[in-house]
Length: 412
Image (cartoon, rainbow, N blue to C red; front, side, top):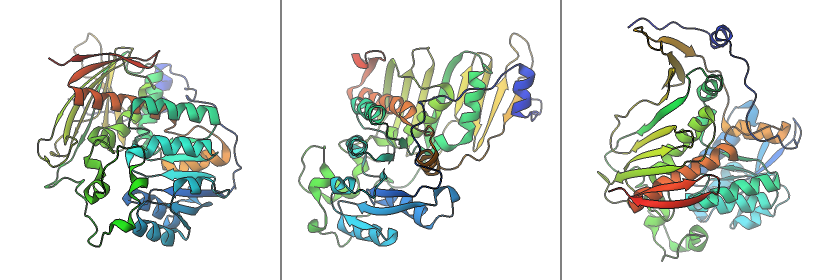
């Protein structure tokens, strides 16, 4: 194999006759001003909510300065009090009370998955911009409702799929849009990790008392259950509150892929999965998903919590193949119909900044979020259809025009 030649991306496209790529996405909304203070309300102060609070209050990212956490909300009193102290913010027991506050310009929603869609819709209806932890929604119908609310209200919606902040996907988007790899064929994305026990068997507070938890507020739109500390502290193990490994680990990868290849709704989805190791959780620890899109681009998605040996992320075209590794991406440009080694073109990602910084910048100066509804909605639809296929053991056919499931057929 010949040694790959490092070619500057700009020089590659210049020599190949490629032009610039116009930005995709919805028009920018009205801006608050470059120096505007942004009042933030945080709903959900568990592990991820605490991490986001810490990033805003203790981080040194210049792009997030001027964002002030003014109120926090959580169903569990110890978490609420700790978050209020850390952020020096008002503690609010119910999210609707937080949404009524005039000093809240935007909210961070870091609740269990089953609350995401409703929280986002209520926040935008209240005039707030929304930074939502992934996935956008558990149910595919709710994903469309969230996207429609964002369009109607004109509020900014950013889903925190961190992969969308990796510049390599945007550099590949430029290349694909300029036909650098030819017609899309199939892509593969993988998450692989391993541990002795389920990572979702999180510790239950030793001093937990039912009176400290607003159980009704935790359940929200989920079916009624009697109070259960296991369901509260380890909610990711249960279908009623979680989309499992597909929603947790594949959603962000698929959203990033849709940045690169262009957002689209699927036409057919199949999936298989099993609790191969962690039998004490409802959701499987390993899943294999196949998603087919209208242009016959097929995406294979693999996620496992039970093995750290996976496969690389790859986009295959008729004339070139994109390989991803770490922060890097390279294109193997095929020499069609010739017995030659492919030319290796290395794309050089730039520093793009965090999705939170991008969200705040869009509020202040206008712009389209890096993981807005145009990408976040079709990713949520595909992931939920994958879970539907997995749980029903059927292939799900979807009509992207009418936005309906047209049929389901047994896998065989």
